[in-house]
Image: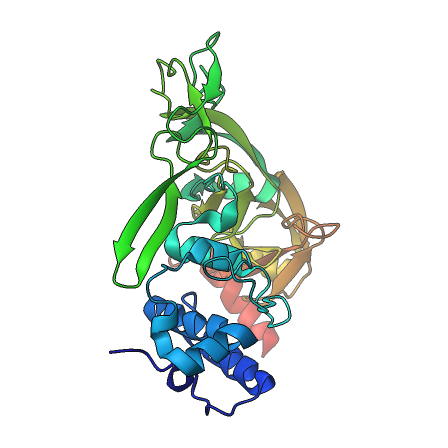
Length: 364
């Protein structure tokens, strides 16, 4: 059954050129293959209708003879995609005016025609994610850690070009350097000429006379990558460091992916972290709490003496300025917050008990 181009575009036979153009633009947006629910068959049909009805001469022939006016000649999508219309007719389709840019690229993706020019199928390498365990002090002060990753890497033997060093890289004999091979298919609508990426050179248009012995012409190999990563001072548990280009090698000269290092900080038995502050506790004798004195305090950088005022209650918090974590995105450091716990002896000598009883009487 012959197709009704007016019905396909949803316009009347008296529709103006502007109405046909508006209808085409709406339908092309709606059924574009790149959209969810897009329909390649439908957009092919829409374009077939539009390239006929948008041309005054071809529309007149269609109105007089129907679809059969062009049914025996075949339709060349590649010529149409490049603005040449079908069977040598120049259409008045201006894809840029319609807001699609160069639809030659779109049809190349749909029908494998490459928009009339060779495309190198480069592909970005994959990203890698790893967990890196750190000790508490390593995260606080920073550290350089060695890493060893097994991944796809650019072949060191051929530098990624796939050819054995010292041998030539020549024009691909299968595609003649175009990177594409053409195929003609006959259908009830005529002959369709399509093009696909050359399987011999993967679209490169070049061919190694002798493939690399290490990578067998792939340009990449699986191997170990040993390097050192610098961990900045002040990094927190769960934070991620991104190293651009340290992921999997790209394909056909494409860029390498990235490496994402997620930091896992081990707990410390003595210190805890709250933001940029270090939290710790210390026990002091009840005599020091009552009379005052000095006690030794452990910090991340060694031992210091902390002055305890007389009458210090259990639970009091002291602050040691600039003894905390270096600020990751700023200057200076946090503080160390020390909570004092008064140690009360469970067993007292007779003399100590008498002294405390006397103190208690005096307090009363």
